[in-house]
Amino acid sequence: MIKSFQMTSVDLSAAAPMYYKGVYHFFYQHNPYAPTFGEKMVWAHSVSYDLINWIHLNHAIEPSDSYDINSCWSGSATILPGEEEQPVILYTGIDNNKYQVQNMAMPKDLSDPFLREWVKHPQNPAMTPPSGVEVNNFRDPSTAWQGKDGKWRVVIGAQNGDEGKTILYQSEDFVNWRVELNPFFATDNTGVCECPDFFPVSINSTNGVDASVQSQSVRHVLKISYLRRHQDYYFLGKYVYDEGNFVPDVKFTGTSSDLRLDYGKFYASKSFFDHAKNRRILWGWVNECDTRQNDIEKGWAGLQCIPRQVWLDESGKQLMQWPIEEIEKLRDKQISILGEKLVGGSIIEVSGITASQADVEVLFELPELENVEWLDESEVDPHLLCSEEYATRSGTIGPFGLLALASEDQTEHTAVFFRIYRASNRYICFMCSDQSRSSLRQDLDKTTYGTIFDIDPNVKTISLRSLIDRSIIESFGEKGRICITSRVYPSMSIDKNAHLYVFNNGSQSVVISELNAWSMKQAEFGQEESINKQ
Image 1: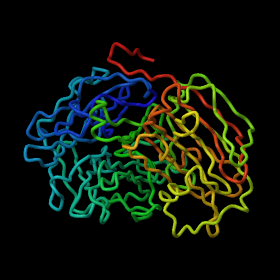
Image 2: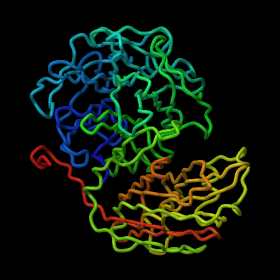
Image 3: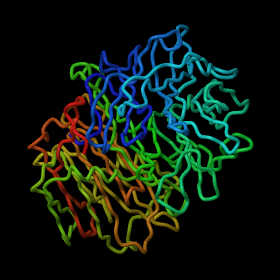
Image 4: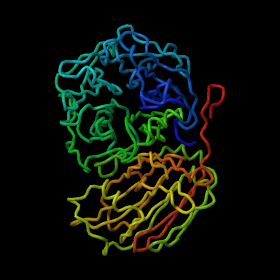
């Protein structure tokens, strides 16, 4: 298992990842009693030295007081500066009236490298639902940042009617908080804004920056998890410090033009600044495609994706994502394919590795684009087109890509592929992940995911990387420009019966310029005594 977390019971959103005194901490929503969302959610806690191998600790925060007796929901961690840095957790509690309130917790012993025990602040709750916010839709405080005036600021997801909003709070001491009257950010007809994540990104480097950095060399990102859509969207824009709000470059439209972190099963994501390696790291929750009853019978549901490094692309118009470099420690046996021509209708098996647990990087060389198919993009729904123009339907350039977790006869497979079109005065590429043939089982959600992006006709190659792990496929197109995560449950292509293929069903040939694939070793998960410091 190379995936980051899949435990018994239900594993939900990343709550408060952080790096402190040489140790990575990962706090996350967990129901220890059943593989479903429950009435008594807790904060689970695991630690790592490398973000790959993990030690599970006792729960960090559990329901216990009037302000969180009905559940401890998501939140964030902030590390306060000082002679000795002080981590503080802000989290949502469901109080004895079923209201959502914001609470604080601190480590009991800063000398404990794993910060095993956490104590709740005596002044909890720190924040209660303000006027104009529904009491049952006021949750998920962000990591705080410090302004030039020394005051701390945090945003909280909220809803009022159909309007989704994030509310800004300020504090001089991180204990007493004051709400700002105007929303930090709002969208109409979206419902609640869950798990807001607000952070700066460098405009001239792939390095990450701390949440409190404010300068001409950064732009700001606001990520929102829209519950109604169960999708994570993000906005690039300007943080107007004096007015206490965020102005996005482009407003939310509810169409395929909106920016998303991942176009598959990926929700309630959370990032943190890793100052050990000067990078911003993103986690995301991969929820289930199985039935609730099957989840109960299995005894588990949900997992966290492989951590990803995040940065602003050179155009300044979108984020890029890539699996953290530490994942390469799990690479084992390698095979390569170089300069292999894929004529229309051809398929090649990538043999010699463990196809059920693999890391695959492939660079395709494209033919000339002059004779590519035309498409009226004004009528295009990428999700619908990826469903209709599936991997076996021939086009001109594409579909071509990978058949992952495939049976030997390809009856079962998940196709991750590209297809190129001409649209008005530009070329566009569809990237799709087609789950329609992922399993012979009929009781699964086998939605097909996809999106489009512009392609430069002067660039002759396109890249794809897929991390495959038994029931999950995380795919990164064009060096992390597009990300699609798929959750699948094959009935035939399991373990040694799983196969991996490269295919081309377009009429034009493409070339495998270079393919490298590795079998992946198991990550280690255990109690404190089972994992030594790397």
